[in-house]
Image (cartoon, rainbow, N blue to C red; front, top):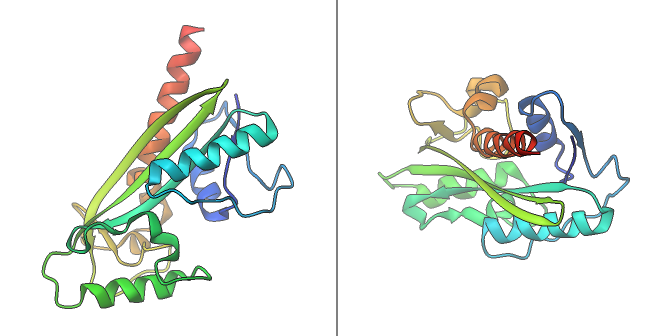
Length: 195
């Protein structure tokens, strides 16, 4: 089955290609020679994922899925959430985002957080939503150099080190994106069996 992933984020594409099983051809926006930034004007992860999937599916007339992910920190009323990528402003800068987060959490004893991914699938004109979560806590300093985004600060539940210290192999097993992609694949596999 061929699916177009509505993203220009190379890191996400690599991560998803490592998760998705054989039997699926995953196209990216680069494969379509599409270099424009996709609009994300929604106030929720669900709205953003649907906005991107609808636009890309309509533009290329292909079955497509998109994701939007965010870090939700309990003590900050689930900030940065939908604004995770640009938390410290434009242009996007992962290090500045993490520095701002650490500053806002300074002195906080509650460091509980979760990563959340929402995937929107547009398949034969119908829309479907899948969600994955990874619970954990925010470290007091950045550690590790694998991964991207907030990985150097995020300690997954049940672990004593950050996602960036654990590496991509661990992340691909336990991540919020892995859980959402697994739901997507399960849905597609069940669909195959019914047709």
